[in-house]
Length: 86
Image (cartoon, rainbow, N blue to C red; front, side, top):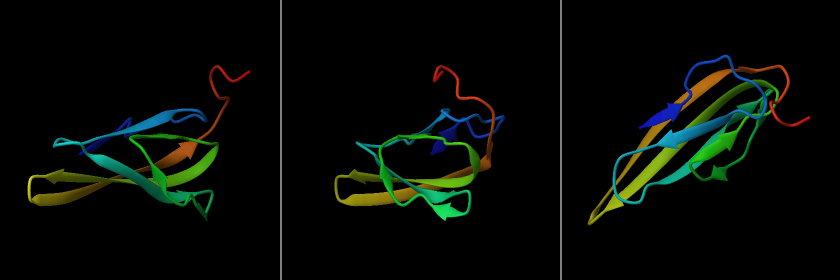
């Protein structure tokens, strides 16, 4: 399982993508942004806002009778102008 990009520099509006091998993986993002919980976000992508963050992607893969999970994280600071937003 991987999160891309996994290193900065990061800017507001950058999209993190979670990838996992297996049959029909589902993804869930959790973590903190500027010291506050981001709650839970479903889907393979997460868009950064401005500030300090640490986010985790958990992938769950169900294949036949076996279910597995994997988790990865990325942290950093998203700063600057969001490209294409102005």
